[in-house]
Image (cartoon, rainbow over all chains, first blue to last red):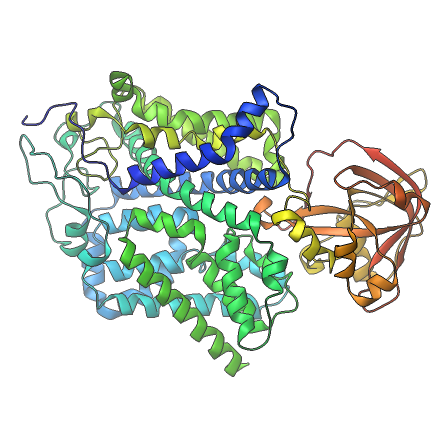
Length: 366
Length: 269
């Protein structure tokens, strides 16, 4: 063993994100904590209550879904043979991208859990364009989401257009991403890998996504696991739990930072104020897209809020329903778990462009 | 300390979430943040967290610093997570400890009451009534007044075009400032809308909250204080004008403690 057991790796972006978030929470809520236990006589400001309400609500709402996404990922990592996805996608060629979107309901998770699952699929060798398509399509082409959209609007047009629109945008972006090198998109690890005592050289997420034919490690999760040579004590249950716990812990700093940002903006900008910015053929969809990005609603409940904005046109509603699960403030930082910052900016631009074109198309067709 | 983190890193990462969700469930505080039906999901989440804790207890810290995939890769990962990564997992619990159970109010939404000002221009049925099926249970009467939530009152009117003779509703008071009154629709200004009761309606969590409200009319109107909770009894009417605002001609207005949960949950499934 050439590396000390207590060696500390160079801090990664998650380290600095966690520092920033921790400082933000301390600055915003530190005074309230002091006041609570050493009362100074003043009640917390109303905006602080709203901030805490949004922050805790989104955390509580999303935690079970993130855990379920992490559980699904752990199961995939342990039991899905790593050669399966690369082989299937290679056979399907370009049609693999729409196929992934159509098969997304097989792993029905909302947008909070989908990041974990998409990362797990990438580890299993699913190519980047296919993973991006899954990431964008799964929170929309989802039976629960489409059913809740039907209930919210009491018609078939909204869920049908939402499903078709989500499919079209996700597939178009997936095909566009085919032109990119995965190394330019996927997050790289900040520290140099330790020199292993024995066994194959460590592999990065990038190399797996790029070279799916790479011989899989024993456990099949796509990493150089020292414990693969000697199965972890506790058996399968402990391994699933270990994967789940680690994925959850790794996801949460990104997620919490996104929720903190979304809660701050929701606190200081009311939805009604945003909605009053404008309707009409051109401004309406744009306003609803901004609203979807800022409100950071769960895709399973967003239709109920969207349906309340009765002053907006049908295309504006479709723009809201398609954009929200693909792009919102709480998701932006969570995407950092998988992608580089520049790719997130590009992806966001593609999503906005795609949804904008979709809204224009719906306007023309209806 | 490093040894503790190295040995129990996973436990320290999972512990704040187990405490937070556990306290929310045990104290019933989760209804301040998510719809009651979400409680089952919280139980499942708590169960998964506890199982993870038990299954990984003492099996080293995480995430692995070198490979970055976040998994226990053997001896190299035994240094455990860095302290900022560990500390940030405690952020939601810290917020809950600092603030206690919190709920939304019109005064807290939007900087400096701008949210309230914006809501005030259409304070009466911003919730899409289509999304809210009425309870199938038989009507509830208290002292001859039909007990309804504010949402049920709107739904009843929009479905049938009629209103019960006498109703009892619960909501939080809001008194419009002169500046907010100036922002009202013309017919609402003509109707001298000054105070109303409102309650937030949620479908899934507080993040999707929307207010449902009713204007208060009559002698009791002057007793209303912003942010206090009231039980109002009286005769529901529709105010003249295109806004079709619902109002209650008050028979009785009683200040009450905040209800638990503070929100109306729109039945969606």
